[in-house]
Image (cartoon, rainbow over all chains, first blue to last red; front, top):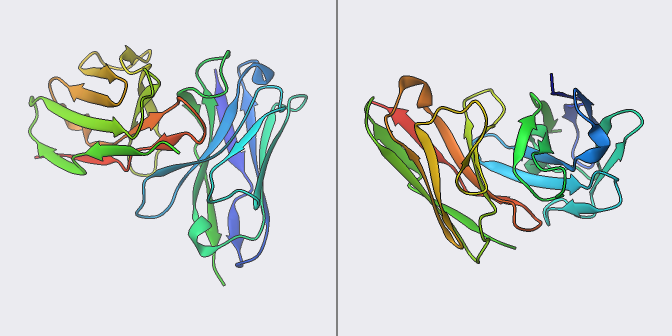
Length: 122
Length: 107
């Protein structure tokens, strides 16, 4: 069964750092681009960052560019999101998501993790 | 960046009704459009990809149409379990962007 499991969320002070992980199973991880998507309280879904299957190409939303870094370890079937200089507006549930199409970095997301909550507060 | 605008922002309908949600892209995205359903406390679920292709396991009462800039998601006969928030997403280019969501309530 295809499965994604996020971890690493928690409470962090403004200006702090956090690293999220997403463990993948049930598919050939290195063949698929992956993304992080967040849902802030009372808001809609926001795409945060994406990475190609090889890890050679990365993409970011303007709201996190320069502060967040996406990476992957295909030997460990794990996706990461390093978050620095965190702000209150980064408070959200963060989901990792797998693209449906193994031939494209940009595509619909067919598998999602359950999400991990990040709270940025003094 | 491509902006995605959904309408309406909320809708209330009865079981058995036909409901249509619209999504408009700020520039042409061909058929690179997906629709998701999200229920409170749950991860989003892919319903439609490629603007009109039904994801495996999704009931056939869900359908999608459109290309270029204008897209629709239609639920042909509303069921109680369809109460959720629905999002469109463009996958034509990065940054991938979502619509602001449409909250569907069952009367």
